[in-house]
Image (tube, rainbow over the protein chains, first blue to last red):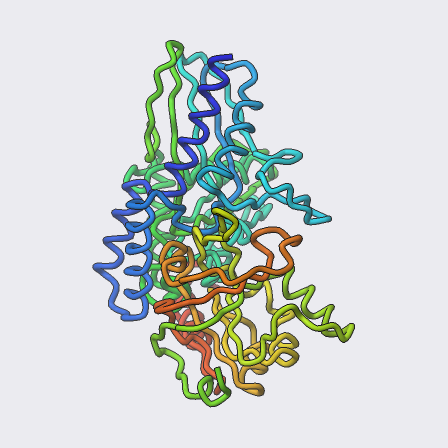
Length: 289
Length: 192
């Protein structure tokens, strides 16, 4: 029972950390963009973002009214009844922080008001032999999530096909996903796995380079191309359309080349915690990797 | 806001707003248009008013609603409804993010309305500009989708992104983006 209460409290703490303050790598990228922008309207957007983030952090208030859907990644040691504890934490966080009640039934649009429902919150489990349980939350706003895309390319389309799909998708999204965005790309796997890879790629710090040199090059090429587009902050023009492109890959079928895109708004909110067997907890906004 | 006020604004101007605004997004637009088609009156008279594409976070303290966070939502979701909304209710300004499609721009020109872009996600700054939650209607639609009546002071900064003369920053940016993306694709060897 004690452990489930702990998980419930950790869930609330993680959600509060995530929605009220940005990870350092994202803040640094936004500050750099503000310094380098030449368009006045673009600079106003970035300054407004930075002023807003600073105010949210100081007052422990949600930086954006869209506190997203609560998406969780849980790995490591298994804790019994963890799902129930996370659910209780989400409901309490919704009234205590508060979070916006975003979760609705998809057809009737009925809103129970506590961000809980069938399949909600989303929890992705990856059990392993660690001596701790790691919980990461990524509150995902709809403005950026609505611009998600999947393409089952022909293998013959190769890297060129991937580049064209990413460019076309981000350009078509324009100002809608709240640029400067972070572009998560999943390559390979099955259709659903590609989508999950795209979302998980958004958990990597912007200042941690991809371990795979080919993917690193692809990330850099796409970032430069997207920032040359001129979409700019909020789609009002400028040189900062994306803060980064993050790619994850997995082996796929010899006849397939799935490519998935998950866009993240500038408010790239995330927070992680490790719960150890003895009950002590370590927190990190940026993540432990 | 009068038609003259709206028509005086030029795309690219930076503005702040004092007065009364109403929040409204997908569900509020759907219901308001249903009411109008059935000849029913809306709970608020929107003529000369300002619509804020926003689903705020509100908290009830001692029986009174307080605003916690209120930034703009993606306006394009209202694209199919906004031209009729502008025509029927005579609103003079729409606050949102990301811009709106040509039929809405056409309605803005015809009836005298502007689009004010507020920085997406700037919800604490938005709440700072809201001095009082005057009221709420249609709360059965859920907190984000309800129609909130908000008194604002120094609300902004906002950019006039579409003016009542058909000038649109989004169109200007689009034209540049098309050219730039062609260059980028050529550089990446994606053309031909």
